[in-house]
Image (cartoon, rainbow, N blue to C red; front, side, top):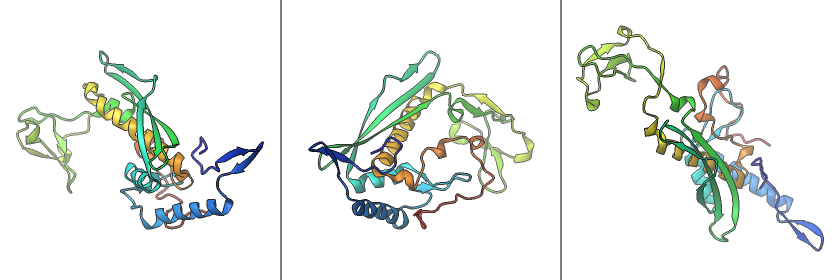
Amino acid sequence: MSNDGTTAVAVRETGGALEMALSFEAMRERVKQLDQFFRDVMVKGTDYDIIPGTPKPTLLKSGAEMLCTVFGFAPEYERTTACVEDWDRGLFSIEIKCRLIHRASGWLAAEGIGSCNSREPKYRWRDQKPACPQCHRDLRMSKHTPPEWYCWVKAGGCGKTYPAAQFQALGRVENPEPWELHNTILKQAEKRAYVGAVMNATGASRICTQGIEDMSPGALNLEDTEASYSPTAPPK
């Protein structure tokens, strides 16, 4: 497989010449099957998602797992030497290499590298919450309509609720407990490496991209309301 994740033609040297492992007809059939798999099996919102402002669907972990099962791959993970774990400062940067092994043959099908760190905006920052006037616990905003602030009993709060307009958003503050993110960052790095390896092994990057769902909204062009491609009409 090529380093950029596109479908590659494996070659082997025979008597000083290079011989393709797949004929062009076999390649076309494999691409056709992959497109059909996305159309008929993959579920939007579960296996892939459409992120506004991006040209391709984003492959999610569930979709990568399905592709891995179909192609008969087994993942193996290892940390690279680029990992940083500073428990004194709560600074974590973890890089993972994922290898996909073909179960039937034991061959290495592809590799992927994924990293995650505690300085990424979604982990570094927290929305500052107003305090409950009754018990001084942090209030949370409900998701129902109309929204309201509530003091969560399960977190030790008093259970009182307040109108949304009663308290203003207070902006962001740095996460005071970065140490609790260590396992989350490890799993995120593993997921990114895994999805990347699956895309490299299957050639799925002609249809999907990866990792867009992890980006902050400010890094995306949200003026477009939908992506220009849908798996129901694969590119030719």
